[in-house]
Length: 140
Image (cartoon, rainbow, N blue to C red):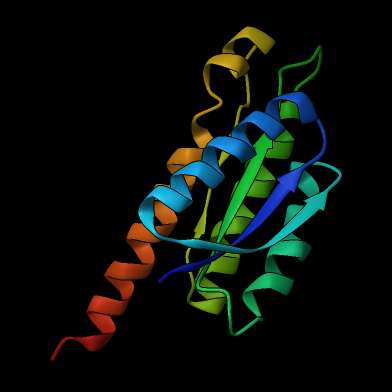
């Protein structure tokens, strides 16, 4: 069984709540365990929580859940680009999957509502990657 940690942004919580619930349901459907959930203020704040979870022996992968909606400036792009880069760096550093379930940047609130399945997709990616990395490690 795959053990997942969730890192969930509180910003736009009405949307990340729906993303979280779909992600939990999909994890259960796939036979994965959500062993830990960490709430962070926003997507930009995720890397430290991700790193802390990746250090735990009982976490096979981390799923990020966040929603960054376009504003009047390019702030949304900066947030998502930096979060995504650091998330990828942490995955490589700890050799564990970290799935990107952050919707945005450059989307309206209506588009964000249409993309609440990003958390579900991130769970799918995390579980697949754990299994595939284990297959590689166990192959001759």
